[in-house]
Amino acid sequence: MAEKKVLLTGDRPTGKLHIGHYVGSLKTRVAMQNSGLYDPYIMVADKQAFTDNARNPEKIQNSLLEVVLDYLAVGIDPKKTTIFVQSAVPELSELTEYFLNLVSIARVQRNPTVKAEIQQKGFGESIPTGFFIYPVSQAADIALFKGQVVPVGDDQEPMLEQTRELVRTFNRYYNTDILVEPEGIFPPKGQGRIPGLDGNAKMSKSLNNAIYLSDDEDTLWEKVKSMYTDPTHVRVTDPGHVEGNMVFTYLDIFDEDKAQVADLKAQYQAGGLGDMKIKKYLFEVLNKELAPIRERRAHYAEDRDAVLQIVKEGSEKARVIGQQTMAEVRHAMGVDYW
Ligand code: ATP
Ligand code: MG
Image 1 (cartoon, rainbow, N blue to C red):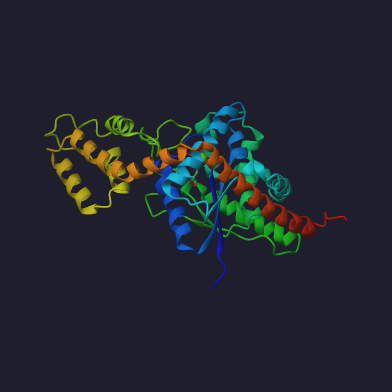
Image 2 (cartoon, rainbow, N blue to C red):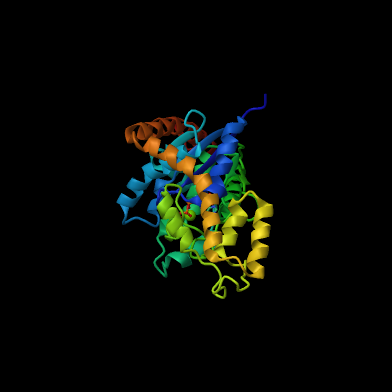
């Protein structure tokens, strides 16, 4: 049998995970984990979270467990997938430092995702240096584990490109082939960047516009009820617009019954279908998917120590791999003096 490919991906502990993460990345991870074709590693990127939350350590600390509970709830199985914490593998920082010498400031500046995030976060002239260079540290995360496949949302494409460049440069400068170029695995078209409830281009845990996997039924209904539809659709009989209408955007993504969605769209456009009706329908679709996740999450949340133990064991295993690769890196660079 062919050797299993190393799968590496992760999330920042900046809040609970949402349905954007679910379709954008988690679903694919679970399917890949269960295929038996991969050796999966999932990293909770706490150090990366500090790059724009340096003053908010409690948020990062609290989110760590929440994120791991979300993993377990969607079906990540710690017997098959190694879940670990970034800060528990200090070798990642060491490789980052060496990688920083292989890339120019101008190249780092060209990353469109980071550009958009800098705008969004309103850093102005005060961009934290760690934030500015986080794609380089992310490249080190992937490279240290020799990640071959990286299932992520569309916003991560520039990070993968940057990682491949850094790996190539490293291998060329130090005349080696120890580091591996990763391949990004992206969600099906239209599911790689789920928009926020507010119509913002991206649902994000830092933007307060998300439906969380852990939201209870009431919260889910409140969020769906408040969703942006079509301001010109005043009376039920008025013809409505489906483009830019968040309810239909979400139905397109989450409802597997495509014929039904097409039918509802036609009715809505013709007039005669009320906003409350389509919102109720969307609620049912989402709730059907989220109810079992919510139940499993509540089960795991009963024993938080057991969850922390999973992460501790995963981190110990990850550290060993990090140390092995770092020994190879130092050897390739000639910094293993004795
Ligand atoms: P933050 O606002 O703190 O950056 P985030 O919501 O962007 O949080 P990350 O931890 O940065 O979440 O991203 C984790 C993974 O989820 C990445 O693979 C990313 O591409 C994917 N992802 C994040 N938001 C979405 C979204 N709205 N739609 C699809 N995928 C997403
Ligand atoms: Mg993000």
